[in-house]
Length: 350
Image (tube, rainbow, N blue to C red; front, side, top):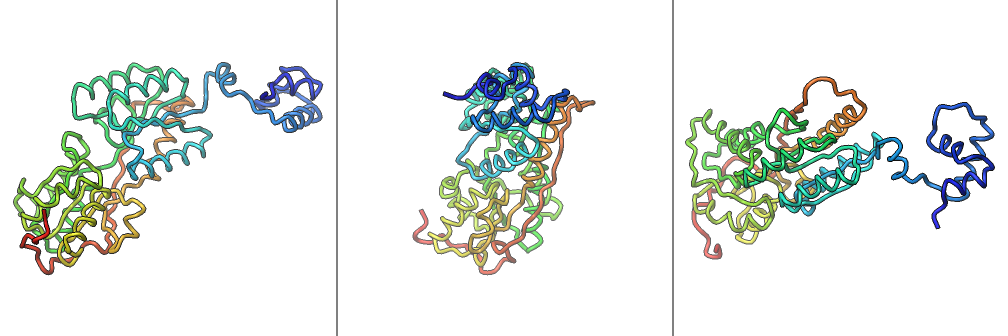
């Protein structure tokens, strides 16, 4: 059986309250000998305080709930790692809930985490294709009696804490880079355009085109689902439009473009330039390495945890904050000036 506080008290020859004071490092007057005896007894018995019991007394569990939409997506795996590292550094434990993109599951985890006594929740998807579910999600967040902070796929609202990327700037940077290289027919492999973040990336892309006098052509835009496999379905329509470059709205879909272009015998960047979004680990080890728009996940994760820590310590005077972070263009080998243009549909293209 797991040793109890009573076992430690008996072995150390002190009261249960004394053990509690020592194990919780309370600032009370106890002799060094008494403290040493309690700590030695706890060590010999392998005693660890019951955090549920401690939480009942302190009203804090030092636990943060994180809800993400897809734990198989490398982006969310990377973001989770940064959030966990930042949480641990500040003395918090992170527990994960994967909604698989389901608004019902996201709502379930919001209630479940609150019922299990987490101190706060980080929600990585508060916006859904169905506006009614987005509304219901935000109503649920506001009804909880614990702090909630929004990240990534979120509906912009000033009434809830949020850490966000400037997606408009990211889309602009990608388009401007390709335009400056000399590309004029640029294909877009978008994420779901029912979500605000992808609408903003497309708006930034269009702004760059407009500034350079390039007409926006909807025929050069294909919508994907952010997964590698969606590139194979969307790519043929872009190739038929004789694009010389493609902007994929995340690195995962860009990986799918690599795979499909290789199958078709089309070279990157000699035939088609390619740029992604996120700067995941694999993007720098591909051949050629992927030019991409980097999200500062480490800085965003730390900002999210620091903000929650401030709120939980009652240091959050003022309004709810929306912390905006800027993306960075990482130029690598997958983009170059237009060379041999790919205009003919290859015989093996489906």
